[in-house]
Each structure stands twice: as structure tokens, then as C-alpha cells.
Length: 215
Length: 261
Image 1 (tube, chains in turn orange, red):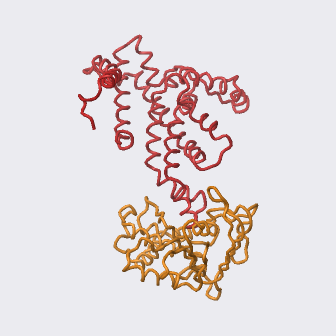
Image 2 (tube, helix red, strand yellow):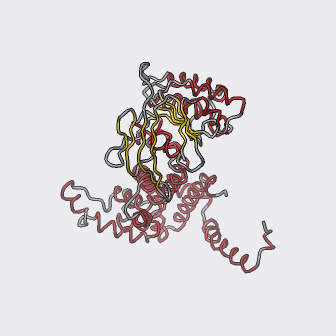
Image 3 (cartoon, one colour):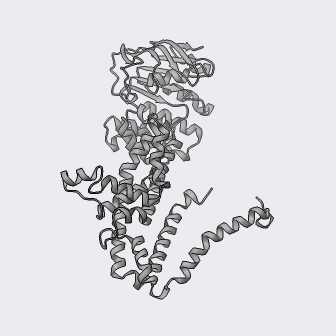
């Protein structure tokens, strides 16, 4: 489903080595992600979300270097590939749906940016909404959704984003237990070459090929 | 909540005086209004001409506020500026500057011999003082901060979260601005437009100083009101009632924003 994925390519390799500035201290990171499905675990405040934000291009390194598939996208200096130019999709922990758009148009948003026309993008978005069990609320605004529904819509939008790398920040934290298993399977089987999954749930980590523990 | 009559007298009395201070002049205006001939006074040629100038000037000024103020509000809210307090003070200054000073400043900058005006005159044969364009400029000068502060505070309140979400969905900065930022603060943009339009409509001091009071070109409704006070006070009252109604209309349109808490 993701047009950028070439069927022969293996996982995209991500390496982060350097320092990142947090509010009042700097955090050292030395991380290599080479597997298709990597779970990132560790206590609160060790920089799990910051790691995702660095990979996504929403934050810059203070020093060091970040490479995706061998290409330097941030060298803490002159080289910085902006978020919209990296092949990265994100499901944010706090959902971040666009309040002025209907749920289906939120999911269609990345497809529209990829150049699809409105109807094609909506049709494809409807497929992702069905996969996360939100077909019935496709035409409402995000404000009318419950917390769990918002998170599912956010997952659908991330899945719909044509990208090599899918970053998930506690994607199942606010969904109910019944749908968690099905959503987990959905996330595992996505076409994205590499999935980096921040989680507190040991069950999520079991599904991953490897586990990265930050401390 | 304390009932009205149980409020402490030292607070209640000044509060009532304040309300009286605001209400009495309006009552004074309304009781002098020539209600039976109100419409005929408003369709008088001079008043119609001033209405036409006022509409052109106030809507053009609101349009300029949108065109220039929306990018400015975004820059103030999102960019790490050098000397941010100074920049913000300069942007807000027209709100507190005496309008006549604003008019004088515009004259020294854009007048025929002004800092920039002399070049406009000799290079492009553009003269701003005593023209409708100059009137629009004066109104924009005083109205811009109302638009910018309204929109900037909405941008700050909204934060960068949605713009980040747009960015990871492959939207470049301008696409994110147009498809996410602007639609999600459209209420504040509308409020800013209403406020800046109302301020432009009521503009007097900067206009008369910079653009004078030329019938059909720079004489707006407030200037016409001032002129009529001498010769035809009832006409002045009629225009005042019209402007009062428009101001109330703006407040009602904004009620969801400032009249509730």
C-alpha cells in the first residue's frame, strides 16, 4: 500500500549518535535500529519520544549525526533534512488530528500531500479507517471522537502516510483492551520498511523483532 | 458568587459610577437623535459620499491587515527574533500612540518631502497625503496591531503540535500554513478582521493629520461627523448613531469571543 516501498528492500537502517538538548540538560544517544520491527522501552524521561522526534526531523541534534539508510539527515550543523522531506510517518501519543477536517480527511491528508486527488485519497483513507474500525465516524470531526477513537484515527493517518519509516509513540495507550490485539496485528503487518515503536506494554515488545532499551 | 447588593459599598459605588460614565454619553447621543428624519439625513449627498469613502477605506485597511498582518503574526509567534520585546513593542505601538502623532509620523515618512515619500514622488510620481490611498494607509497603521495581536495569541495558544503533524505528513512549511495553521485559527482571524475593520472605520486623528478632509477622497464618516457638528448637528448625531450601531454589531458578532467567559 505504501508506494515508496520497494518489495526487495530490507529494513531502513537508522543510526543516531550524539547529544540532544532537553529543557535543562543534554541527553546522549547512541542508537542503531536495523530491524523491521523495533520496540523502544525504558522508564519515563529517558528520551524515547525525543528519539522519535529526532528521527522524524522535529528536533535537531546538538552534536553528532543521524543517518537513515546511510544518508546523513542531521549532522548538528549545516545538514538538516526537514521533517516533510524525510520518508517518515508518525503516530503521535497525543493524536494531533486536524480539528477543522473530517476524520476521513485527516487520514487522507498525507495521501493528498503525496499528490492523490481528493476522491482517490478519500477512498484509500476509508480503507485505513475500516482497518482500525472507524468507518462509522469517517464523516465527523475529531472533536466528536472518544480518546480511543482519536488514537485509532491517528494510527490510520500514520499507516496511510507513504513513507519508509513508521514511528509509533505509545500508539495503543488509550485504546480499549478488545481492539488492542487487532490493532497490534495491523501495525505489525504494515508495509513500512521499518517500524519504531515506543511502548510500555511488554505484549507490544513481544511482537517486535528486537527491543531497544533506553536508560 | 456574591449578590449585587451584598457587594462591599467601597467597590460597588465606583463600579456603578464607571458604568454610568460609559452609558450616560450614549444616552445623551440617543436622546438627541432625530429618529423621524434619521434615514433622510443618512442619505444626504455629503453623508453618502463619506459613507462610500469610509467603506472603501475600512475594508481596504482590513484587507491589508490580513495580507500583511497574518504573516507578521506567524513570524512573531513562531520565529526566534532578535530583540523580541522591542519588535513586539513596535508592533503594538499604534494601539497606544496618539493618532495625531501617528498622522504626523506618516506625514514625515510618506509626505512629499518625507523620508520615503520624496522617492515615491520622484521615482513613481506617487503622492500619498490627501489621497484615498493615504487614508487607507493611515487606517491600516492604527488597525494593524488589533489584527496582529488577536491572531498571534491564537497561534501561541495553539502551539506547534498541528504544524508538526502536518510536517510529518509531508506538508512543506507553506502547505502546512495554508492547509492546517490558517484553517485551525480561522475564528481568531475573523475576530482580528472585525476588530481591525472597526478600528479603521472609526479612525480620525491620523487620517485628518495625514490625509486631510477632502470630500469624496479622504473625508470618512468620523470626519464628516466632526464637520457636521458645526453646521448641521442633527446630521452629526445621525451619523454617530449609525457608527454606534455598527460598533455594537461588531461586538455582537464577536460575542462568543469576548462577551463570554
